[in-house]
Amino acid sequence: MIIVNVKEGESLDRALKRFKKKFEKTGVLRELRSRQAYEKKSVARRIQVKKAIYKQTLNQDNA
Image (cartoon, rainbow, N blue to C red; front, side, top):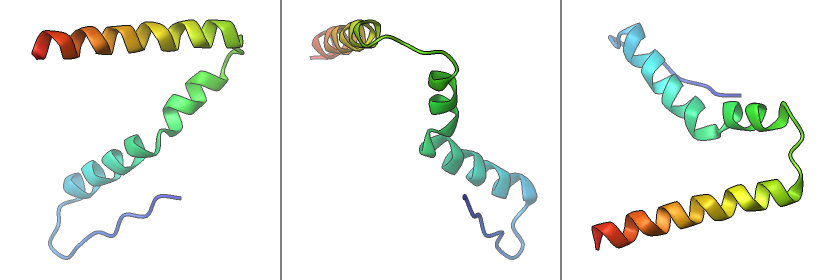
């Protein structure tokens, strides 16, 4: 459960923004989406390798 204490004089928009950040960090939505449909291990591994290759090319371009 995510708890966000609203400080005195703090606007509700600011508190909502802090809540959204905390919620995003927990990764609840990401996990829900991944659980919606079963993914074979081979497919998951293939996607993971593609992501790793993509990240590696990004790092090489910046260096």
